[in-house]
Image 1: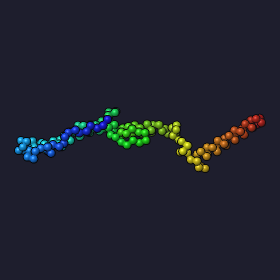
Image 2: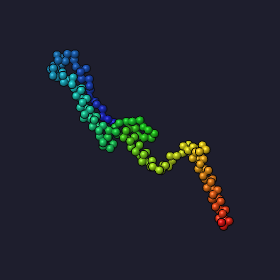
Image 3: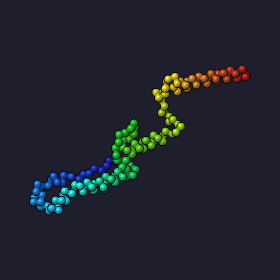
Image 4: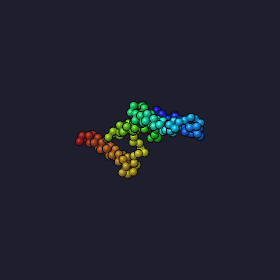
Length: 141
């Protein structure tokens, strides 16, 4: 939901005649009011429309729902949408738990001290231990 735009024609002074008092029969007070009309309309829009829209906390039409923002990754493109998306991302990342699909082969190191190398050595070591245990059991030891 977008923020309501001001629709008041603000060309109030420009449309007056060159001699508004004489041509348009404006009194000095009426002419002063014309000069104040644009500022008053803007003040009314800001106080009665814009600020309430930005301060709203109603779900779906809050200020954050009305303000656009550049999407991040797969996030929505409003401030509220991004906040909710980030909250979901945080909730899905539980301390001590790695979400499924978050660690890919590309993210794991292939180096000698890397996790893939250490794990493969660990698996081979365990396989040898199990084989030794089977032999010992077969021998009755």
